[in-house]
Length: 377
Image 1 (cartoon, rainbow, N blue to C red):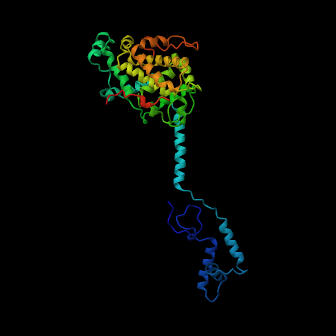
Image 2: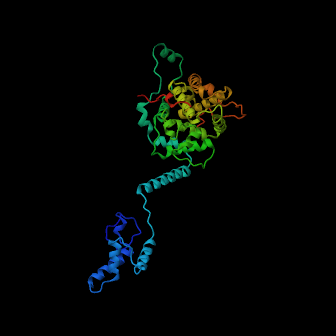
Image 3: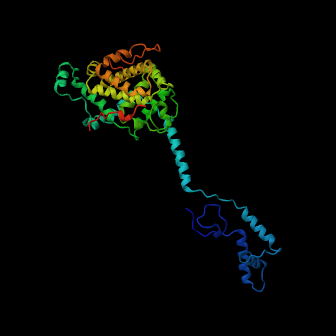
């Protein structure tokens, strides 16, 4: 705010009125001389004449007054010039700098998230109580289909495991929260894990997310189909030593010049496929055996990624085939998840063993419009 007090000389700060309202040195000296002349009318001063000439006449000053005028103008010209800057521009510049600095600080300083930490975080947040009323845990069947499922279908899940199974469904209904630091760290850990660069800056928004297979500058928009279960599966993939070879091979293929596909979006489709199998109760036998629904889910997810990688590479698939491939994977997961897990333990064409399944819970441009809402309306 500019003070409104009277000034007696030139100012070097911002002003709110015309600069002419602040007298220059030459104007001050002439005005002082004129005032002095008025008090002594019997002795007219050269300064009074100068004041009259300088302020009220277009005639050039006399040679006698020229040195004083030149001296006064020189003094005024030597006053430092103040460049006014719009406050809006200044605020915008500072805001942009602060935003970039904040994003860089979060991206560089945030520690990597672990699977155990994130699971404990969701448990502490009480997502089971928040979303349980909205989940659908099985596909309702009627008529002969219901009879066949009763006689020949999968075994019923043991009662003690149902809460843990429901927890998996609630993860799929839990949305990304901008205010949750763990949610943001999960995404940053996935980004750095896929690129194998633990110190790479990872701002919350930006085109860099497309490098790992998200569809835009905000990865949270791709999570709506599976909630935070999608990032949790990706986190398992990038942090499990058993899956390091599978992760590297699959991600490398997703960047191929001919066979490329959006890796993280495809991963979310695989998470969705395993959720559908869980709803069909196709994982019940495996869960009863392992005693851990989430660990079993993550094992089947890794096995489905292994099948995707094998089919995509050997079949010369491209992004145009993605819809058909995902549907076939979904069917395979519903019909025989045990076969998928056996494949996960087999050596790949690259000569490595992707041993992500332990049998006891080894884990502690696809359009997002194709996703189904796994929470009931």
